[in-house]
Length: 373
Image (cartoon, rainbow, N blue to C red; front, side):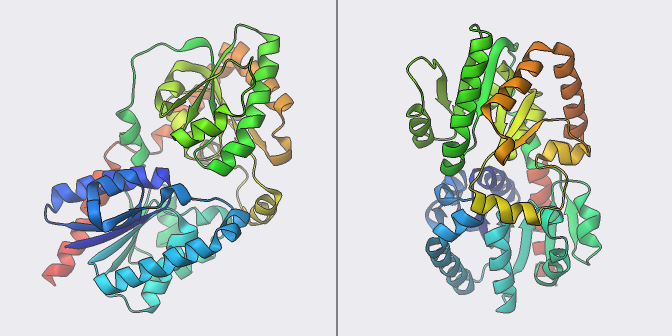
């Protein structure tokens, strides 16, 4: 059995690698093809391309790299139509994956078109859901409220739970929080690090002026990101930047500053009181703001239906405002406990661990039932 998978960035690579391991446990002879990140490539080996370092966010970044993505689009399309796998599994990354799925459907691709980690079209274009129902065979969603939204359009949908839960359970540490430590999490993409980390650094400097005993530690997604961040430091910053320490740092720090994205749910899972920071180019922000149909940017706030995590977006993401709010969190134990209580309620909505296994079982059931027919 041949299965083609497409993921676009580090979070999709993490979820995709878990899914692949579970699929291999159920289908030992399955062959994996596609594109994703290093973890997925390690499982698939020769038939797989690591392109996760090219991931972008926002309209402007896509325009800049459009020729690259166009080449990748047609390369994958040609590869899939030539290979004719039993299924193509699209993992998140909707800007690319939804277009590829629709193109394959129009070409009368005979295999299953399955989406895992449902795209958040409910936040920016719910009218797209009925269109998706015409070219996808199955949607596997990770938030419970999504199931009814997709099923209303006639798209067969399974709620499998959030794959993050099981992945993060593996990274739990038994260590008390360090009362004087503040975490800086500027994101995984190079462009967002360049825009967000300087703001976090300046906020950290303002905080240290208030209390010289405060310590700061930053998490870098890669060695190259670490080098970029190191170049932004001033000699007296005294901020340690480590690679791959995100989960541990979220559990050790007393509070933090976190870039919008997957890390906001991860921080909530590890009960880290934090503020959300989001800053992109105006050419990306303005079209996005016109499209967004939800009241909040951070997923913890969206799931809670209210702002439990302070959000500092675009022009509001100033070092002064961020530092003031972090200081209030840092110095108010009751405020931190209240935020953590709301985070626990949000995390409970994500389901039990084992999302990757449940997703693999759904895929195998679909494929084996078709084979019997």
